[in-house]
Structure formats: structure tokens, C-alpha cells
Image (tube, rainbow, N blue to C red):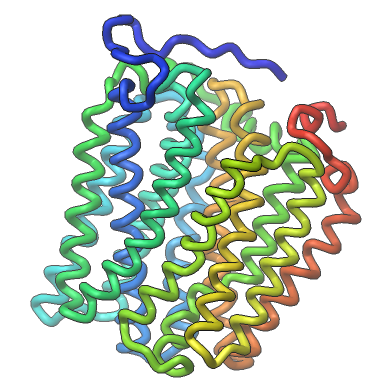
Length: 422
């Protein structure tokens, strides 16, 4: 499928340097908004994870944090894509980031006043989940409208690297702030969310909407229809969904940090940062040696490595070995990311990008939250270490089964050939 890209600016003078990302002010504002929002989320996640476990001592409660974030995304996915394709995407993102900032600010005040309870934390997590269900796919659909087509790969790489950096420093900041005060962690997270909303407001509104068009029941489901019609895309995103769902040990990191590896909140922050370190390292490698062929085999190999790394982390009693396993896990995961993005975004027309991104977000992004719930339930039933090991073996099993269910994806060689698979 071919796409036509249009110059994103009506006034040529608005682009000082068409060959430099720094010359595209809307992209610069977009970049800061996304990075600030990511850092805020990571700080919030670390603070919530440690505080919930400190208050309840329950692995199941840790899993519930993921569930209350997942359910709003599940319920809102179809509406999210429809809204993102009909209204000003900048406004949608700004409102979501402001809501998240407000929710976390209230959490900070509640903790400072001494009346924050687990129920209040779950409510804040649900608000974050509902807001992110709109923010994430809308930002994904927004990027191609902000820059020239020739700069889209460079912009995607710059954004991905920045996000991985945010995933590294965010948990560390969160762990250090929580050590000083949970209130400080929540307050800083709120300020980052609000800063993200500020940068989103600076993006030129002329670039953020392709214009409203009539909605219908068919248009709501068109994103699902599109994905189902392409076995390569369906196989890729469902592979990620189930592998991360089964291998989602992130919810149990507070237990590992406190009871198994015997570190404090700083240790939890470092453990949460480790996968992003691996992802960033692999991103640099892939930038120099991009995945050009045998993309199907490479994706399945990455999922198998993801499962093996999860198993090693599960049985580890050493902080160094645990960090190494998490670094390998993150490196393997980013390989599937750099394969999925071209499959979904480049071949999707702009008029459907919001809907397809919303469905993709449900399959991919929310697999982390649902995986956290699965890990919490499994840990409550079988214990923490067996739960992580079950998840690792499950990820490997999914990869092997998907290789048989989606032979088109397994045998895919180059990106340009995938759209031709029937």
C-alpha cells in the first residue's frame, strides 16, 4: 500500500531547516511532551508499586494496579480511535496529560495529609489508565502529521531513543524521590505531566487534525477490520500481546526488591530501569545495523530470548544477575518493537491511523498492565518465583505456537513484502 505525504506546514517560512528535526518546532514540542509524560508515568509507577506493597504486603494487590489501568483501555479503545480521527489530536493529548497531572497531584496531597489508602491509589491508577488510553494512540497518530515524510524514520528513531532514556531515568528518579518522601515522588510526577500538557499546547493546531468526518458503527470497528485483514499485522501484535501478558513480571518487582534481593526503593527504581537500558543499547545497534531481512524469524527469536531472560530473572538471587537478565529482556523486546512499527504505521492511511493505533495500543501497550495482573494472581496462587518462571516458559510456548499459526509471518523476509501477504 502506498501513501501520500503532504507538507505539514501551510507556510514554508515556518520550517527553518527542512533537513533537521530541530528545525521543526512542532516536532520539538511533541518530543518534549512525550518524554515528560513518560518520565512522569515511570515515577508514578515506581511510587505506586512500592507503596501498595508496603500497605498491603499482597502480590494480588500489585496485580490489581495493572488491572485497574487495563480495564479503562479495554472499554475505551474503539471510542479512542474514533475520537482521535475526528478531533484535534493536540487538544486530546493536552487534556489527557492535564488530567493525569491533576490525578497524581491529588494523590500527593492525600499522602501528605495522611489519608491516602489503597483504594485511593487504585482510583488514581484507573484515571491514569483511562487518560493513557486516549493519549498514547493519539500521539502515535499525531507524529506523521508534524514533519515531512523524508524525516519520519529519523523522527521515529529520535522519539524511541528518548522514550527509552525516559524509561531509564524515570524509575531511578522515582525510587530516589520515594526514599525521601512518597509525597515528593507524586508531586514531581504531577509536575512532569503538567509540563507535558504545556508542550502539547504549543504544537500548531493546524497540523493536528485531518478534519472531522461523520462517524458510524462501521468506522468504529474499521481499525479491527483492517488488522484482521492483514495476517502479518495480526500475528505480530497478538504475539506481543500474549508473550508480554505471560511474561509480565514487572508487577512483582517490588517483591523482588524488598523480599528477595533485599534492596530499598532505590533498588526497585534500578530494576525498573534495567529493561530500558537493554532496549536503548539495542536501539543503538539497530540504528547502525537495521533489521532488513528475515524479519519474521528475528521477531520470534526475540520473543524466545525474552522468555529465557524472564526465567533467569525469576530464579536469580543476585542483584547483578537480575539486572543482567532484565537488560537482556529489554533488548529482546525492542527488536519486536522496531519490526511492528513499520508494519502498522507506514501502511496505514492517515484517515484510519487513530483507529488502528488505538487497537494496536490495546494489543501491545495494555499487555503490560494485563500481564501485571496475571503475574499478581499467579504469584498469589503459586508464589512469586514460580509465577515468573511460568510466565517465561509461557512466552516461549507462545512463540513456538505462533510460528505454526502464522507461517506468513514466520517466513516474512523484508518489510516491503509484508503488505503483499494474503
